[in-house]
Length: 195
Image (cartoon, rainbow, N blue to C red; front, side, top):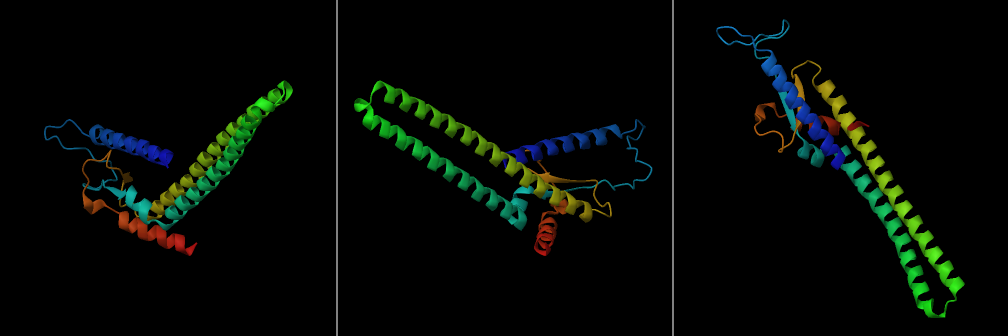
């Protein structure tokens, strides 16, 4: 989720930079200060729509299902790791209880066993962490793709030049007339229910 939010923030920052570039690079130096329009653009035709990402995350059924699945998967992996760690701790306590009565050879074998178990646990913990990151990335990319595909269809008549996700940390003012969050949520949920 953090990677998705970070990616989204980067995308929004790039979009804002593009908007500034387009705005300031299209000005002509005339006596009246009017902006030059591309040959196929109508005056006032440049529109940017936005949607509230947090509203989408809390109301898009597919996103909620993905988040739930990721949470369940993470919980299962953490449970597996906890079981393995508890077995490791139990073995260490067992060796500690025998400690005084163990021979030098048994002590060396116990230390090797503990070191091996610790390495196995660390490797499994790293593997499961990587699995969780990969799974999260893939599923969130799938959500992003569904949103992008829907927005392409939503904007097939070219009403908007840009449709961006709103984030309070990047956008300080937005006109609610261009908020398409409810349309997006309704359309995505309808599409998700049909599938």
